[in-house]
Length: 92
Image (tube, rainbow, N blue to C red; front, side, top):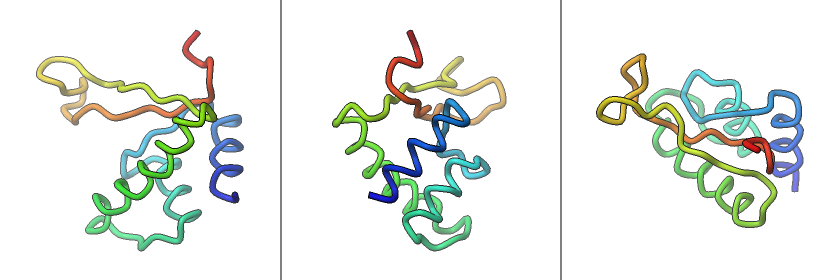
């Protein structure tokens, strides 16, 4: 699958990726899945992307960790936590 290959390629180069709206990883996934661009589509897009990434995670192709949690579940910058996607064994 093209999506799987490109996600692996991205994570090999960048080491991590998350689905924050301004991240390169988010926009790469939107492009690969031919989703509509725009901030009003963000929730719908992340749901579709997470579904595909979760399938890869269950197969053991990628790993996922929740990051950015702090006081009341917020990051230091005031946004909510997000999942960080990596290749397996990155966290070891």
